[in-house]
Length: 442
Ligand SMILES: C[S@@+](CC[C@H](N)C(=O)[O-])C[C@H]1O[C@@H](n2cnc3c(N)ncnc32)[C@H](O)[C@@H]1O
Figure 1: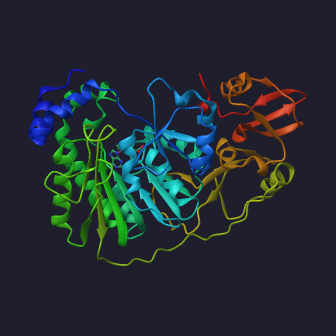
Figure 2: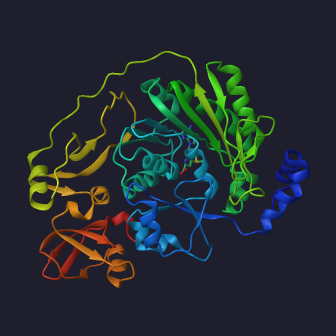
Figure 3: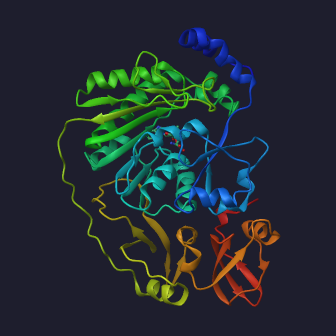
């Protein structure tokens, strides 16, 4: 791997005695990780059905290393949203955010959504997750992941931190700022990033990070906690950002990150955490935990809750389901959503998902969405066709092909090893494939 000489000079300056040992990591295998999605499966149950050889990641409650030769995205269990593939050190920021059930949490720079899903699994369906990214292309991946992993209590937003801060002043218990950065910790994972690092002007990041953190801080409640993280080694994007922020915001204090599992002190700041590839099995991350100690307490106007769904939706439930959903139903452009509770009135923000997208209201019927299938349990649906993870049928289903199976006529929930992956309509033994087109295997 050919690393830019200016990068190596910077690292030598930062690491002095440790530089040689850091440099050697580029000749070693990188770390591969995945996290069980505890919204759908417990860690114990996951380990029972997982076909992979896994070992524990110490700083994560549900994260595991896997070996390079395994391709976990090629198992149908992945499409059931049972695990997320995530670089091991990227699992640390949410572990230190101290998210509790019922919290209101913001993930401000969220796409493609690995850390949002991790936050959602800590919330376990209680409270609310607002997940945002400014980049409209990357938001598409964020939406897909939110849906595939079965997150319901969510607002997906595609807007700027500044505009968000006008809506959510003093609203959140927890905020994650996983900031855009020069990505120096990603070189082993993606060599293409070395070229971008050389080509791009990385000096733009500190100002961008400063502005994002400033907007984020306005949205935190008094007493609330914020994690600022990056996947770069550059001190200007890490310790210096925090030092400068604390100088300008004396209503914030820095909390200590426990230095277990090979996590190190920061450069010149003891409280922050550094995950170095030469000190633990991970590609590298920086994280700082801040708490707001003082500020204005804001009361927000809440949206009217408990809107009823249209009758066609209730008819659909009666015909197909063993459960009936309760909550606040909202229709936007013929799309029916189950909105999160305690939603505040939103003014002029680009919201792409207001809770769970249940489906489309057509003239006199309701058509369920892929996202709806992904939040169900097999016992919620009247007709279920279960496929085994190693069957040719499940692969064909994921490719969008017609399959031939036994079952009851009508709309069926299709499951793999009893975990939902989508819908299909059975007529005789022919299953019309309902798997979302944009999710299909190619
Ligand atoms: C490090 S990545 C986030 C990774 C993500 N947290 C995850 O775990 O999957 C940083 C993200 O910040 C987004 N971004 C860049 N500028 C931003 C801004 N001003 N406000 C919000 N997001 C921004 C980028 O589009 C990018 O998706």
